[in-house]
Image (cartoon, rainbow, N blue to C red; front, side):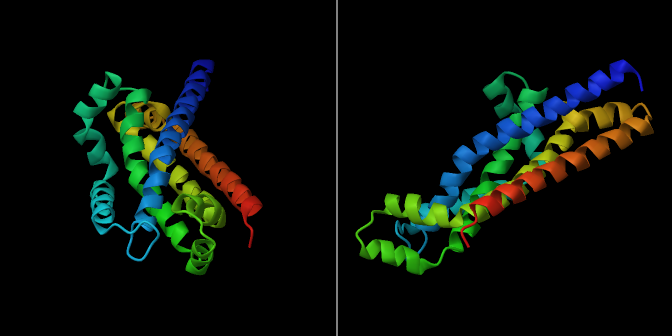
Length: 217
């Protein structure tokens, strides 16, 4: 393999890491509070509000029901409005973030539902406010599970970032399509697949390690 191709592989790998990390960070900032709202505004919960809960649930379900490849194309005008272009690594982060937000919301909701409601009732009996219950009971108790779920979302984003290569999103997926598929380079295709497998393994290993470290059970 030529030195130019090695440089291209390194650049594509960096683009993939950049896309996934930034998209994941923004999606967590929005998705985690979304998941908290899904749980706390449900029936018989500390912030019960059926209307808010239903509106959030409908939006989350609507976005999650759109396949990522269609979402990328459908929001091209929105992507262009946000970042000024619809092609490239930065542009690919817009659909990646939008796709991850509802995913994270549901995963966080599932984790918080695992917390025994008796702990919430005990905190309520001690006079804790809803915000205190969320910060000191729900999130600490569900932290290990949330990290495990976020690991799953991170791995899904790696796969989605490779898909973004179909519309010129850059990264490993773009390299695999342009060189491995369109230029009939099986060696490039194999290397890109191996890189993606290694990336997923690393993310899973780190996620499992951190989840085990914070697990209080």
